[in-house]
Length: 192
Image (cartoon, rainbow, N blue to C red; front, side):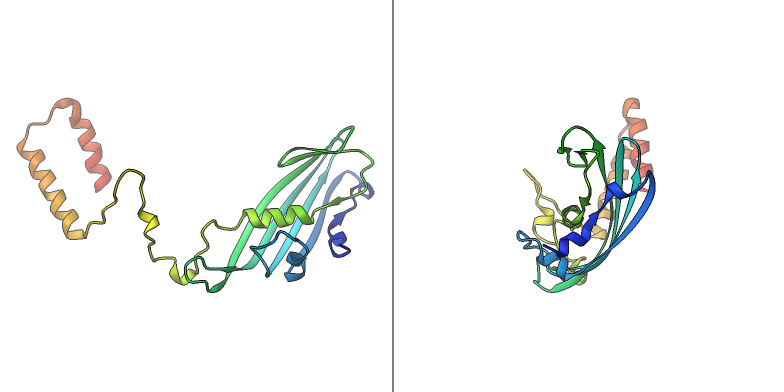
């Protein structure tokens, strides 16, 4: 746990104003989280911009770099480019407590804030739900076309052109109700 102490920001020492902190994230960082089953390796830089005011401290986390993920489809390992920005606010109050996911209350004599857990959570939140290797991004899954209560059909260009020409023939042969004429014009504009 001594390693995670390097992620302490000793807020009590700083005067009001803007301050910057840089942290390097690698495999050593990810090993310190017991519940970590998603990430083992990564090479990230975290810049924390602290704005200390009379009643609150605002921390902006700018995280960028790469993490090593395993493709859900092929089980191949690949590097995923990650870039995210998150904000955490600490308000001064009588007790230390979490108000919501981005706001916490601390006392005025709180010596330091450890940002390791926050950085870890922000990294996890920025990962894609479906981890697909870049080589397979253009391939389609069966579940990509699952629609509740219906089917999705893929038409070839010939079928689309045939359908469009039959629609225009129908429109030309039938008189159009004036109430629908404006909608039909809009539809034709969108298709062209």
